[in-house]
Image (tube, rainbow, N blue to C red; front, side, top):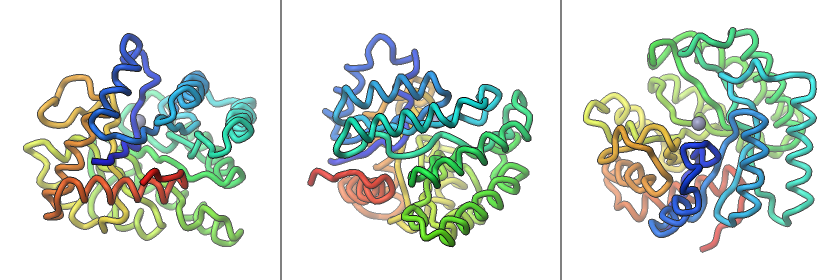
Length: 283
Ligand SMILES: [Zn+2]
C-alpha cells in the first residue's frame, strides 16, 4: 500500500502526547505522505516546524473561516514569510498549498462578511505564490446544498477565471474541496472548475448511501482521500480519535465503490495528490 493522507491536523493538542508514534503508525500502515493544513497563524508556524522535522509530513498555511476574526493587516505577510522561508530551506518545498480556507455556514460564530474577506485575501495570496488551495465548505445544518456553496462557488469561479486569464500554472490544479459533503450537483461544479474532491471517514458509515452516490459521480482521477484527523474517524473507529493510519479505511471504501482493489485505490489517489500538490513521488 502506498497511501497519502491529504488532510490531517497533526499540529493539534490532541496529538500532543504521541505525535511521533502517530506518524510512525501511519508509515507502518503504508501512508507515505501526510498533509497538515493550518487553522490559524499559530497552527501554521507549528506545522511548518513539524514538516521540516518529518520527511513524510507536508503542510498548508492559511486561516480557517472559523478563525477568520483573527485575520488582520499582518496576516498575509506572515503567511508569505512562512512560504518563502520554506522555499529557501528545502530544495523541494514542504509547504504545498494555502489552507484551510473557505466558508462555514454551520457554526455561527464568525460573520459571513469576515469569513469572505479573509477568503478573498488568501485566494489572492495563493495566486501570487502559485499554490493550490485547500477549501473548507460547510452548509447550515450540514445540508448538501445551500447558502455556503451558493456563495463560495461564484467566488472560486471568478478566481479560477483570473488564474486562466493570467496564464497561472495553478489554473490546471487550483485545489481541493476537502471533506466534501455536498450534493452531486455541487461536486460537478467543483470538478468543472478543475478542483479535486476530498473524501473522508463518513463515507464508511452505515448511513452513507447519499455520500456514496456522490463519490460514484466523481472521476477516480479527481478523488483525494483524507482523514481530517483527529475528527471524522472511519468505521471501525467511529467516535474515537482519528489518525492518518486510518486513511486505509477510506481507500477501502473507494475501492468498494469503484469495484477495484484497495491497492489500486491507494495508488490512484496518491498519484492524484502528487499531481495537485506537485510533490515528488517516491515510486
Ligand atoms: Zn480540516
